[in-house]
Length: 142
Image (cartoon, rainbow, N blue to C red; front, side, top):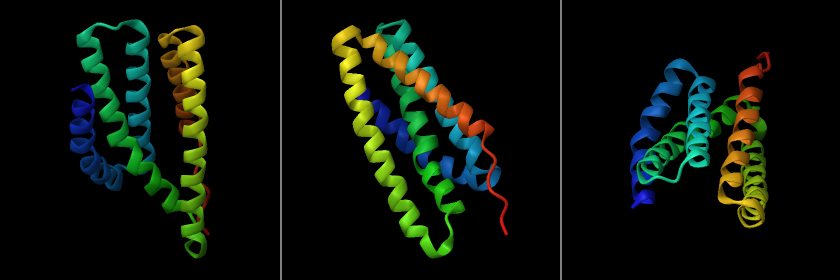
């Protein structure tokens, strides 16, 4: 049921996130999504209580609803028109490789240490990504 909740929240926020990113810019919307992911991971480190799990899965859906499509749009915005498909292909390849590697790391942390280590690692990695995106300045358009 928690994954159903995640999917409902994700679906409910993906379209409004796109509209918001068209109005205020891609970067702030992605940063909100990353913030929701950090909050979700932190909640899962601190507690396994059912209400905390419900809140975490709501934040999980919000994070993906805000960031998933908006990240793609951000990449597409800065890809040169003559290689836009190549850039998007490279982006999705990179995402796939990172997801595979992060799944292996998460599984090892879960088994070798404890489940909370997996979520702590996720919170730290998302914090690094958030800081990197926050500090990133888009290239000047010529």
